[in-house]
Image 1 (cartoon, helix red, strand yellow):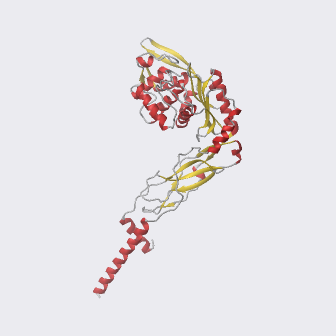
Image 2: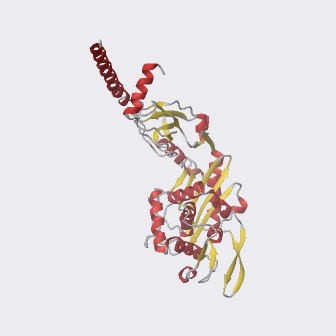
Image 3: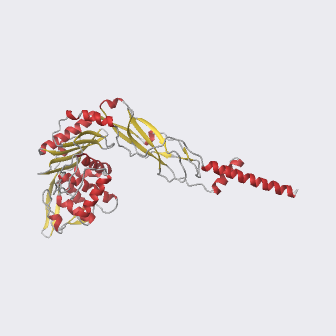
Length: 423
């Protein structure tokens, strides 16, 4: 009898071990067959037909500036383009990149608005538009941003470049690195203010590239509008000579005249002619209009306003929020749980223009072919792809809503026991 029990016990153990091996094999080899997603950047318009359709409207605006671009800031969609990639002299709209890096440094905790900036002799020696900072004078970062945004101060731009990077040359390297990261393919900076500019010296940009850095600035750091929409302000010079007030007047005349204006920056030199990047928002649409090499100062404002009017008159905003997208749990192999919860973190935004306004973008959800533990929270596991008239217009990443650890043998054994006893 004892021998029989011993044999039975061994057989039971062998049976359990076999069951575990079968379970492990099944548990770790489950595959989820779904459409393979290409993790494309969200909010990029890739439809060639759309570009051709937009181009057909270009002649209606009769832009006389050498180059111009109108983009939707939410999607990056180009709504109008004239010589958008032509290399031109940017003049003081160079400072958009300077401001972008200043706000980025603040976000990263590398500087604060109340930090004191000491003006060097080199910074104080800048000509052109300036606020007449003196060597040794100190102003806080907030005041320097004000001077750059409102008065287009060359001296303040250099002082901030030196404060953040040690020298203007080091700061310019950061500018070019950031330009590359933003996809600005027709841009190269030689200074932080655009004062000494010529294509021959290697300081140039394009209307589309200016739109890209403008879009990045206003989208990531909307606080810039607190500075760039101020018409008049003043700073106080504090030097060895005492205190002295200095008035600031915004160089962007659209601040006073255009409904919904949110900034941004002017530029002009004898070589660059007259440039402007103007941003505005109405009815849920945020636009950037760029004018480069306009023949006179008034035309840049008139034609930038015409571009913005065109965008607002012919386009409507489309937005789908994460709560509007139902995403059921997805099976995952090799994890301590058999399913993972997906989520979308950002809304999808796009502008519908012209006849497109009669249609609604279609949505398609797809996941990676094989979801295998471990997966960390926030890992991209799929995408929501949007099309309009069978043309892809953008996508959103689908991420893991929680971390799933890889199951070990003890986890699998516990699951098997729970299955055997019915729990």
